[in-house]
Length: 124
Image 1 (cartoon, rainbow, N blue to C red):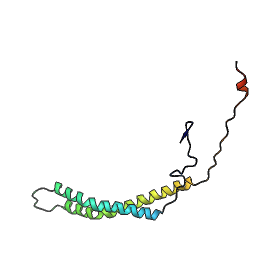
Image 2 (spheres, helix red, strand yellow; image 1 turned 135 degrees about the horizontal axis):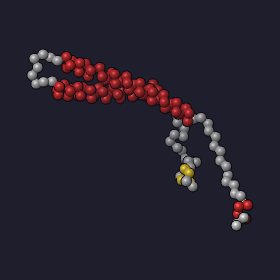
Image 3 (spheres, one colour; image 1 turned 45 degrees about the horizontal axis):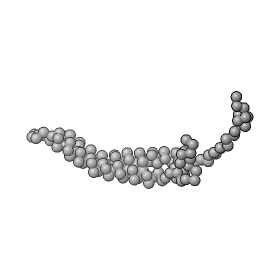
Image 4 (tube, rainbow, N blue to C red; image 1 turned 60 degrees about the horizontal axis):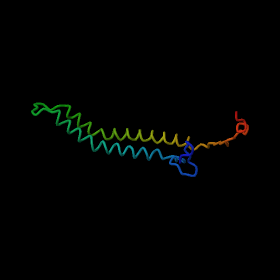
């Protein structure tokens, strides 16, 4: 509600008026699972496409890069899950730190507008 150019939120429930802390471990687990699942889905596909595009039509000796690419496709979901776990934990810790600062008591002081009667009577 706009009141004389100032936004007023009296009597309304705001979204972050009472932020609650969240469980860091559960957020980290969900983030790690999402990152690991996405890596498990996409890394083998991209590794296979890279294998198809990088190999020559006829090779006399097998390339060691193929083996390294396939090992990366197997290890990458675990690394991405660990990265997602760490990022989720840091994000949840940051949220809890900000939510804790939001819950501190604040004092709101408002002064009534005073009108000087002398200014109304002196018209020059």
